[in-house]
Length: 538
Image 1: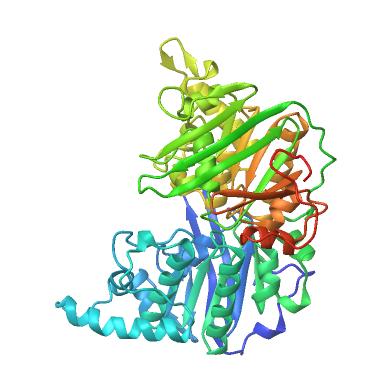
Image 2: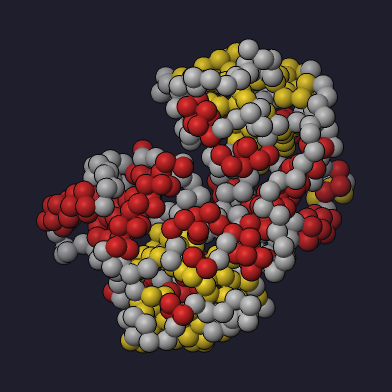
C-alpha cells in the first residue's frame, strides 16, 4: 500500500484480518488522466470505513470500479478473501455489494416498491414479485427504522426519504457491503443523524460500510478507519481514533488548511437588495412565501438558515429569474434602488444578470450546468451575449475557451480540460465551474445556494475565501445553506426561514445552534437578541 511514513497503515486492518474487501494494484485512466494509480485498499468486515480526498482525487472512480461501473486497467478485487471479476453492476450485486450514489438512481415516476424491485423481479409475472417484495420491504423498513410508504411516488418524496429508498433497494438485494457516496450532501442535520444511526445499526449487524465524504466531522463521528486519497493514490490509512480533523485535512490536500473562515468585520454600504411583502403561491394553490421582508447592504453576507423545503429555494429562484411555472407572485423587489419585475418581460435570468445579479443555484446539475455541454461552453452559460465573447455577428469561441482555461486554473478545476463535458467532472468540480463563472462576473448581488455541497475541504476553503473577497469588495451576498456551520461562519447576519416566513434575524456572534434550531422549527427562543428583517433591533 502506498502510505507515507508519517501516516502508517493502521494495524487494525493489516494482512490476516477478516477482510470484506481487498483491492490490489487498481489503476484506471481516462485518456491522459490517471484517475487511480496502483491503489491497495483493505476494508475489515463489520466496520465503517471512510474514504476522503479532494474533488478529483479518484474516490468515486475507485468505488465505481468496485461496483462494476468501470473496469480497472490493472489490478484485482477480492471479496471475502476470494478474487472476484466485477464486470458490471449485476456482478457487484451478486458479490453482495450495494451502492448509494450522490445523485440517486431512481425512476422518479415509479413508486417506492417498483423502484426497489426494479431489476430484481422474481419472474415474468410482476404481481407475485410485488406482493413478495412488499412484505420484505416493510420488514426492512421496520428493522432499520427507515419507514417509507411503498406506494408513494418517488418524485413526491423528500430527498432524505429518496435516500432511504436507495438503501432499502440495496438491502433488498441482500447487500453485505454498502457504499455511500457523499450521503449527507442533500440531507438536513436531523436526517443525517438518522442516517448515521442506521449505518451504525448495519455495522453492528456485521455489514461493511464504505463512506465517501468530504466532511471531516462525519469521518470523526462515525467511521472506524479512514483512507485518504490524493491525486489518484492512497496516501494513508489510519484508525479514526488515532487522528484528528487537522491531520486529515493536511493529508487530503498536502498542505496546512485553515478550517475556520477568516474575515474582518463587515463594512456595510448602501442597500443593494430590498424585498418587501414578497409572496408566492404555487400552481397547486400552496403559499410558499408568506410576506418576505429583507434588506442586504453592500459589503455584507446575509445567510438564510432553515430546514430544506421552507421557502429558501423559491426565494432564490424568484430573485434569480426563474420562478416555478404557474406560480403567482406579489410584492416588491429592488436592486440598487431599481424595482425589478416579478413576472413577464424583464423577469428572466438574462434580465436579472443585466441588473447586476449573479446566481449559484442550489442544484448545479439541473439549474447551473448543461451536462452534455463542454466545460468551456458552461463557463459562459448565461453570459454568452457579453461583448468579450462575441465578434460581430458570431460568437468568439476561441475567446470563450481561453477565458474558461483561466477560470479553471484560478479555481483549480480538475481535470483542467475545457473540452471535457460537464457530466464527466466530479460533483465538486462541477460546482467550481459554476462558482467561477458567477463570481468572476463581479455581480453587485451574488445569490449562493448550497455553495459547498459535495465539495472537498480544500475547495470549501477556497470558495469561502472568494465569497468573502466579493463581500470585502463592497458586494452583497445572499447565502442559503443547509450547513448551519457554514451559515454561522460566513454570515454577517443570519435570517431564519420557516414555512415561508422570516422567523427572525441574529448576529452570528450572538447566535447559538439551540436558538437557531428553535427558529428553524418555528418556535421563538425563550431568550436572546432577535432582529427584525433588515437589521433593526427589536
